[in-house]
Length: 290
DNA sequence: CAACCGCCCTGGGTGC
DNA sequence: TGCACCCAGGGCGGTT
Image (tube, rainbow, N blue to C red; front, side, top):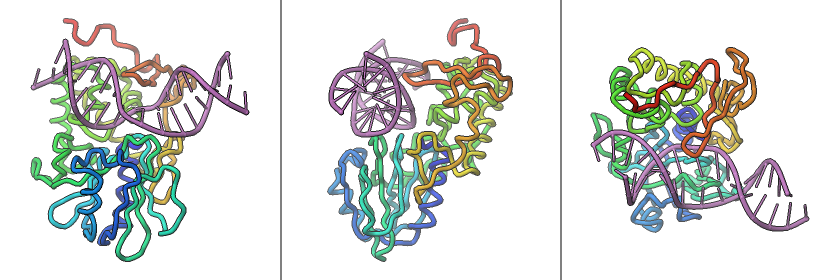
C-alpha cells in the first residue's frame, strides 16, 4: 500500500523520466481510473495532448505533474496503483488503466492498478497557504517531509481533536502521508496504543508519536519504500526493502523486537491494527468519558 | 462543524 | 477441481 515513502519513490522516478518531455497522446483503458476527473475521459485525454511536463510534486500520498498554463495532472495510487516507465511497444500489463505516450517517441508512462482505488484527474493549481497545489487537494495537510510542515502546530491540532490517536494519524487533513503501515510502526516506536484519546495526550507524547512517524517514513524512503504484498513498485518495477524492517505491521504472533511478546492484531475501522500487548497497553478509559 | 460509518473495487488466498 | 467467501484499504459522501 503506497504511503508517503512509496509515493516519494515514485515521484523521484517520474521526475527523472518525464520532466521536460511533451505528451503526445493519452489512452484511458478503464474509465474508473479517471472517475475523479468529472468532465470525463474524453475531456481528460484531449486536454493532455501536446502538454509539456514542467515539474513533479507530492503532498502526502498525492502526486502531481505540473503542466504549462497552471494546470496539473493529479494522481493518487490508491491501494495497488503503479506508475511504470516502459519502452513503447512493451506488452500491456494485465491491469493497465492509462497509457501516456510522449512526442519524443521515448518510454511510455503507464498507470497499472489492480484494485482500481487509484486514479488521475486534471486540475488547476491553486495557492494554498503560500504553496501551489491542485485545487482538489486543498484540504490535504502538509506532510512531515514538507519543509514548511509545523510540528508544534500539528501537535496542537491533534490535541484539539476528540478521537482515537490512530484515527488522527490517518486523518489526511491533520497530517498527510501516514497510512495503516506507518501509523502502526509509529505507535509501536512511541509505545502508545492506537485507541489512546487524543485530547488526553500530553504535548510531549503527541510530539513523540509524530516524530516517530516522520522517522520511520524517512527510514523507509532510504530503503526504497515498503513492499508488503509485491503490489507496490517504483517506476522501474522494483520493490523496496523496508518490509524487512517492520516491527509490528503484518507481524501477528511474531515476537515484538523490543520485548519478545507476540504481536497482537486487533480489528480497527474494518481493517487491522498491529501492536505489542506489553509495550502498548490498551488505555483504561474510553476516549470521551470524563 | 466534527466525528464516524459504509461503500467503492478487484483478485489472490483459503477452506470446504 | 471448483466454488464461495474473506481480506487488503484510502478517500469521500452521507449521516448523526
